[in-house]
Amino acid sequence: MSNKVLKYLSLMRIKNLKIALSSVKKFTKVSYKLEQYMTPPELAALAIYTIHTEYNDIEDKVVMDLCCGTGMLAIGCSFFSPACLIGVDIDKEALEVFKNNLREFEVECDLIRSDLNNFEVEPGIVHTIVMNPPFGTKIKHQDVNALDKALKIAKVVYSMHKKSTRDFLLKKYPGSKVIAQMKYDLPRTYDFHKSKNKVIDVDFIRFTKS
Image 1 (cartoon, one colour):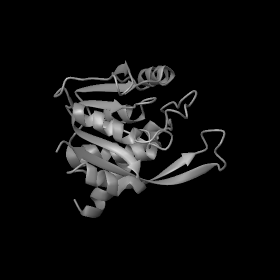
Image 2: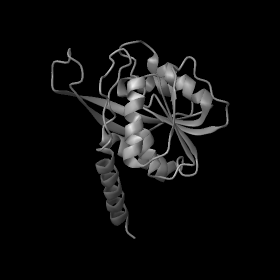
Image 3: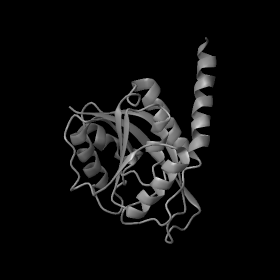
């Protein structure tokens, strides 16, 4: 099979995954303090497909969606046969929407309500964490705090971050690698947003324990 055909098949699979994830229900009410934004289906599809095909870090693995919101990333991972799915978030309302999404998609996932500071998991249980954490624009270092917690829990962490933080993150976390560069089309979410949408350059980064 030619490289051109393989690329076409990959694009079709990503497109089909994006279409499926477009049905994931959104937040009923967003919290600015928690920097809640929906991960766009097209970004989730590309990220998850890359994790599965390039690194084989989903199939038969215990996968956690940290800062899971309504479950976009966890549900995306469910298409690639994880051994177990876990979603963690502090927002009760977001987890209720997540439960509804699980019913709609007929997916099993253990949901845990907790903030990052008090959340503990015995090392070695979780293999992969995939997350879209707060970017740290409301409360400084929220992105780094989420990463530090994730790396205490899992062997490998996949996370979305503003491109502007790339140099800092790659230096702080040896062995990290940008595996995709994406455009995050952020719709008007909060009342203080002036424009209908804003496009943010985002890196999808793979982190491993040093």
